[in-house]
Image (cartoon, rainbow, N blue to C red):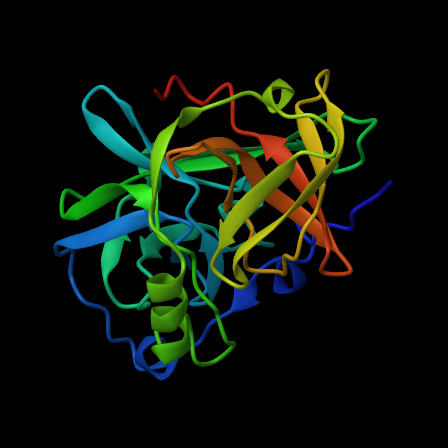
Length: 253
């Protein structure tokens, strides 16, 4: 089973967001902002382009907080490299120095082949992690993820505290998992296949380009969530390839 990924053609892997504010070059300096798993993030590149992906979680190393997303969200595109990461509003800077960022992107999203698709970037001091997911967003090209529909989604979907991280072997075929994404908000569906050797899941779940990086998780009886993996690639909008979150990269905890 193959899930086409657009890591090689970023225009298809994430929604290109050139809002009026970005086009005019307006960008707010680092400031206090709360970020949640499943939130939209905007990755700015050295050629001026910005792409939408989804924050998976926030991990730590040496007292520094790092945002985690899909590897292809921070990979170079031609000669352009990522230079900053913005919050969902495309104006609030949450990572302005990417020298300590990195990504792992190898293999492909076939369940018989290893897949690693994870990236990390240091968060500015003003970015505070909510330790939860609040339903994702509905990212509309040229409008963005901040609008009344996204607000409604976050009001309707319960905020889920993140209880921890689990390996892909914690789920079985047929089990229901959910994802919070920046493009299609919160959707749930059954696991189709688990590959413990390569750390991958295949899930029947609604997802679109821009949900890349989103947390895929199980729900506990108390409503909290255990993050299993990272939304990596989708086919036909209903088949999602998931890369296991564990082990966390680069010594993060």
